[in-house]
Image 1 (cartoon, rainbow, N blue to C red):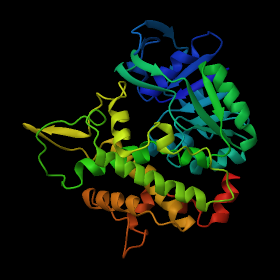
Image 2: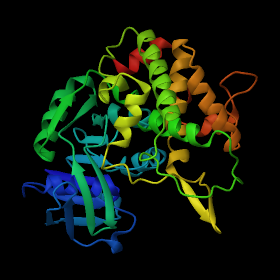
Image 3: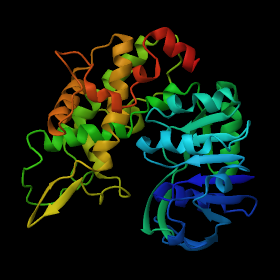
Image 4: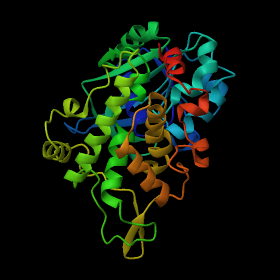
Length: 371
């Protein structure tokens, strides 16, 4: 097959290596910086240290070259870039093409309705297939591949075929899910990152001087764990309220991490070796640090993460006090307006991917889209 990967970051580069474990497929990288790429990429397995090289077939910034003959298009981009990426590919994508997002949260399905109406099979993964980092952009990636992940399609009838296709392409287990809202509700970055940020920085301002860098996961604490578990409990109340959809695939964090207490979650997160060296979104200013509001932790995980979950809570009629507290904190920190007189209707919601911005206002609207 002709497979196009959009975005040459950590995940996209590692996925190319998995696809090239056999030489069956033609891989195109669609990137805004083709001149920085080598056709020969080095992949290093983080666990074993083993390294190998693989060859890319095409590296381009031209949308027609990237999309016109593609059988599969995989976007590995920040959520705030998905809308523009879809607009760019729309003139060239043929019906029957699989077009999707890894991971598929962030309201991606809202931007794809025209493609779906034209016969494109839209898909999303609930989580990334690996933990990876670029050692050299366009040349070398270090990654740890997961044993399995899950995927779903719109229309739902194509989910099994999408899962089987990617099981063969990525050489890993892919489980099909019941409906796309399961991916949108996956309690990953929109809850994990925002809870941790709130717990770490709830009493600072953008001007606050922070003496040292902080490990985001390696220094995880119980307040971060409690906040995250409280958000997860609120998310499952939303799931329960949308009772005409099978959302049993939204796995509670206690099950995902195999823990039964706040302290157990703290120990578990601190023990994840592949993540414990990741730093917090701070920028050095002089001899100390300040919070980096331009980080993806902020510009992605709030407007294209937690705001979406709050939007669905409004539709479902569910109170989410912990999510509200986190959003109100970020609203003040980032100079945003999400709430007006206690109502979730502020002017800055127009720049988010809440479902209401896409004509989804009632439970019936939700059921129509996701059934």
